[in-house]
Image (cartoon, rainbow, N blue to C red; front, side, top):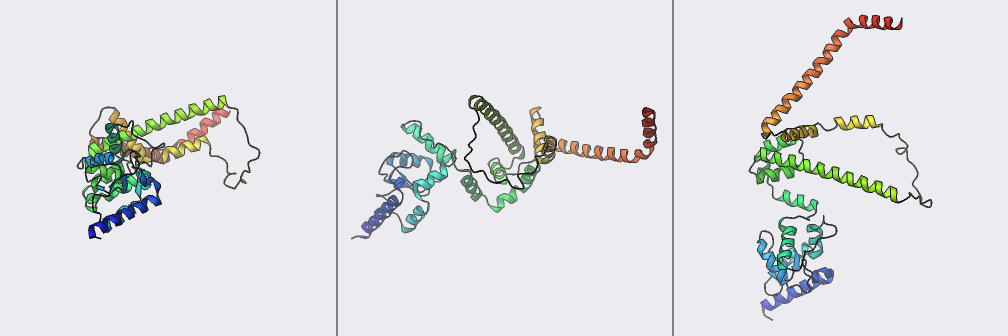
Length: 312
């Protein structure tokens, strides 16, 4: 048998084994068509001819398309393809955050292309753990050195996700003002969405309480109470104070956000103004404490006399 025919026989047997191990590999990873004859070598997925043509449009930096039968695969390429795990692993990675998992809006090529671009190019549904790892792999030590001062400034403002901060700095060529504005907007959007979510959950909970009487299953074996369970709950006053003082960085970022809402746009000047205000408050507070401490011996006799007069 000629060498080329032996290679194709080896490929055929290899892909057959992958299908036997995971039946999902016998279907197109994107549209579900049976018997795919194409694959994306770097994504590790099997494709039908229609989805393969859409993958080619993404560019080889995203998807490298190859035929299972028309192209020759080296042993190294086959081993690398196998390590990626096939359709199931790819969908766990690129559709991990979507429940239920999304499908194309229709069977048209246009909707299928939008779905595929959202999945691999824009990474809309990608599992956040994989996304952060993938982004980190694109950074080098020189990137961290180049943007070290901007990263420190953003950290001082309360934005602690270094990976996300560095990604934005690279995209905007180190423009600190633009990056800070984006992060402040993202922070505001997150707070708004969380507040809306809490309100809707509260409404749903109240509605369910009105509609359904509470029931108790007396046959459930409840765990024994531990010492930690018997500790008294903290009072609302103490709890509120704890939340007031735990995150000065958050308050700093919140101050920037409020200045932005007033119409100020220069992030550097806003940061400098907040630092001056905080320094003034600290100096005033300490001066007030010292003033009270020093005048206390002089005011004590008058206070004592005033109390005696009131009692008499």
